[in-house]
Amino acid sequence: MSVNTLAITVLLVSFFVMIFLRFPIAYAVALSSILCLLSQGRPLAVVCQQMVKGISSFSLMAVPFFITMGVLMGSGGISEKLIGLANACVGWMRGGMAMVNIVASYFFGGISGSAAADTASIGAIMIPMMVDQGYDADFSTAVTITSACEGLLVPPSHNMVIYATTAGGISVGSLFLAGYLPGALLAVSLMIGSYIISVKRHYPKGDRFSILRLLKQLLTSFWALAAVIIVVVGVVAGVFTATESAAIAVIYSLFVSVFIYKGLNWKGVWDALSECVNTLSIVLILIATSSIFGYCLTTLHVPDLAAKGITGLTSNPIIIAILLNVILLVLGMIMDMSPIILIATPILLPIATSIGINPIQFGIMVILNCGIGLLTPPVGAVLFIGSAVAKEPMEKVVKATLPFYMCMIICLLLVTFVPQISMCIPNLFGK
Image 1: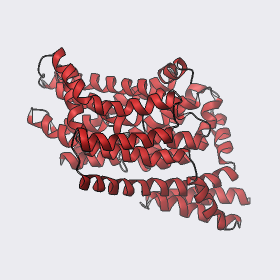
Image 2: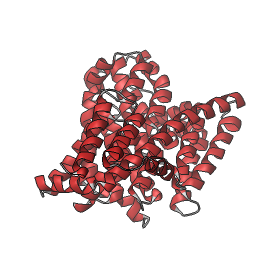
Image 3: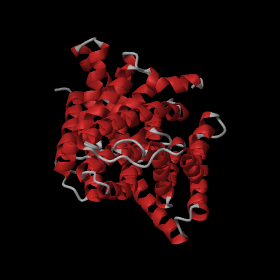
């Protein structure tokens, strides 16, 4: 066995063994990388060099700002305003509260960019409200956790920034624009599934549609939605970079939460910032340790070997695209979202581009696959949060989520095989 083959075996086997032993993902990534370097006789100083290099990026500075923006807006009473706006839009339909849940998640996702934050904030309000109106608790939870994944696609999403940095040379503004239609497609597919179930179970309708109520709620929610406009329009128009727009959005969200909606006092601000530090420390440690792992993969030419292995199985681009999705879905079942983006992107992106998939379109595919992974056991973080918020057994929630998995897979296949869904808005703006 050659030195390279031994190093690859040590890297991948030790990594997956530690994953299945439920090591924290950052430890698994770092320790497997160290073992790989030792098997090659490389100096461990490389570990420190690559960790520092991994987080020494101006683009990555947008990540803590977007996380802070999401926490401040989520803690500042924004959820109730967006739920009211969603209710005015779609609450009149059969199963109206389920539709409200889905649309509210689309709005809130554009502010938080986090499926976990969406589930915790929207779910804490919507699940009890739906149960009180006659909806089953497991159905209410399933709607909440699946619709929360819209927030991963609707900009601004810090996961898009991580993907753009990992992929190299990808425009964050283009990724932001590319996420709108797939996010809307996911919302529509979930609404269709919810409507079918609501008709079968005779769930109630809401109040009749009123244009005056819609306008009133739109005015009330304007300050929340304006945060998204500031970020996306600013980046797309080239007024400022993603990092600069994120910093401006933090100041704006602080002002809106404290002085306009008055959902936060200064003590609440410090609590929110403390939560941001906890979240950010996890994300940055993952980015730093994944940088070592990525270095090992690159020096050992694993991306090239993976590309040859997959293309050696078949030359059919449709089958290769399906294989890429299957790989990402399986990884999503055992790993969290950020490490998948950081580890899988350098390996799978060259394969995707070789069959004609645009890197921006592939980014949407990666994020949607990871979103589905957040809902699947054994590691599905959003699944666990939803179960905890609803106080429902995870097994019961998974069973209720099965029809919505189908909706999400259909959406994923459309995004994979119809590039225009992701690319039409970036192309329209010349991005």
